[in-house]
Length: 335
Image (cartoon, rainbow, N blue to C red; front, side, top):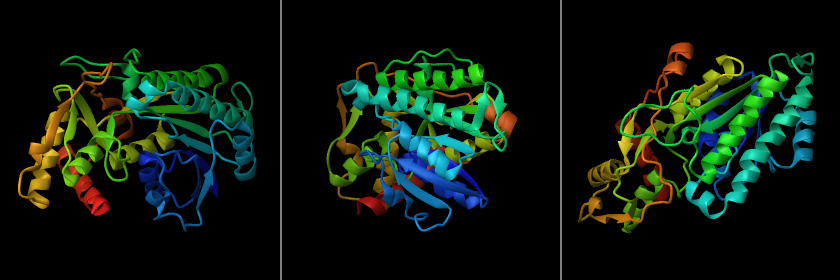
């Protein structure tokens, strides 16, 4: 049986991906390596914790001897690398954690995998000819857009926060291992994800949580900042496709074609809550504008035509259908 290493599998996207991937790939076993920072939650993986093809290891991707030990023990033929510090506000306050995990941690994984799978540049060891390293990244590496235009795979990198700078650095490290050593790598850059299992600190869970608790719902600046929203399960399907069928050394953008500004999102969530969980006053009365974040990018939007045309991926959820499912999940969690 093939074994693959998934890093950061207790985080938001990883914990959506692992159950989906195990269900669809009965011939593959998964080892989930996660340090369980505040953003990791093993309760998000309850549905797989007893499966024989799933193993959890608590550990740090910066711990090289642990990574080497895991490769020796499990003989991995693939890595899907989710593990990252990802909260922009935290990166502004504490950038060193982002450099350590996102840059050094990614290098560690790459280097151990290369040494385990390859004898020399462009020469794979027997049995590892198809061993692949899939790096999960973000559209924030491209910087910001004006009113028009879309990020493509050829867009120049222009990161504006310590978070996006650390992810850009990790993307370049992955790219270098392809160009220097011929290592089998792929990278996916996704737009903003939403859905079940997201950490409370993020925008959509925060809006839902504050609405239900009767607190002010904070919206940065004038609420006009735009993001392209991607339902987590759609992202998971895209990751699986790229891991299995993506071209060696290539990057694929995964986006939902669902551009919405932050104020619309707050209003939409409040309207759905007014309908399915009404109270005396509308939840919209709790919306409150707060001082904008430093370096707050105005707009992100992804052109996903490469993954659509080459691999046949398409987002199945639009924002309005996905947000309803998301709210229903959080209602169960917060009640």
